[in-house]
Length: 234
Image 1 (cartoon, rainbow, N blue to C red):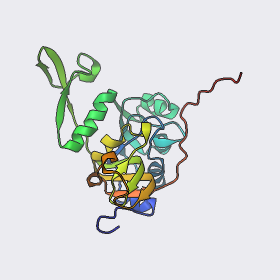
Image 2: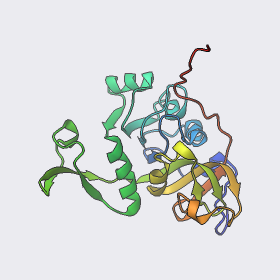
Image 3: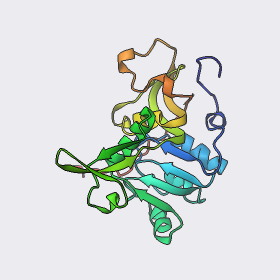
Image 4: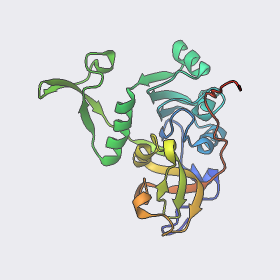
């Protein structure tokens, strides 16, 4: 990797510098748009004590759920955790610290972190356990709680296309938490389906500017479906 070329050719190089007890922000929603191979590299490295910030924790044998079997995750900040039996077991036994966060609030925590905003007020969670112990204020007759933004040591995201400068384009619903996550890491790593030369991406179609991205790697993906629903043939 030299100059503006941010392409790396191995997952070891992509996740170089990740060490125990770091915070990792991961894009994706369910199993859609998850950086599955970067997660596998974390699994291979055996990095432990991690704080994971993600909408959810995958399933037992895929995605972030793969990190649970070896107790690599110490804490997770997530909004939905209902598809993973091992996650439930560790949470209920106290082995895993879980900070449940409303989905929109979690997305804004990432976006605000990437924008350099340390905290923001939201009405979501006011008057519920989510708001307990948090600063409260009233604006225009409505009550709000103060939520702190999130920054990660690493952010890992999945995109459809990238150029060698790190500009990213997401495809359809894979453009979920990925754009916000990509801005919020001290080191942001993107794995993509296709890498093109600079100038081949329409500037108006770029979702994450390369200024936010430190490393890009091209991979192949399983793209597993989380819950397959089919209709009986007639």
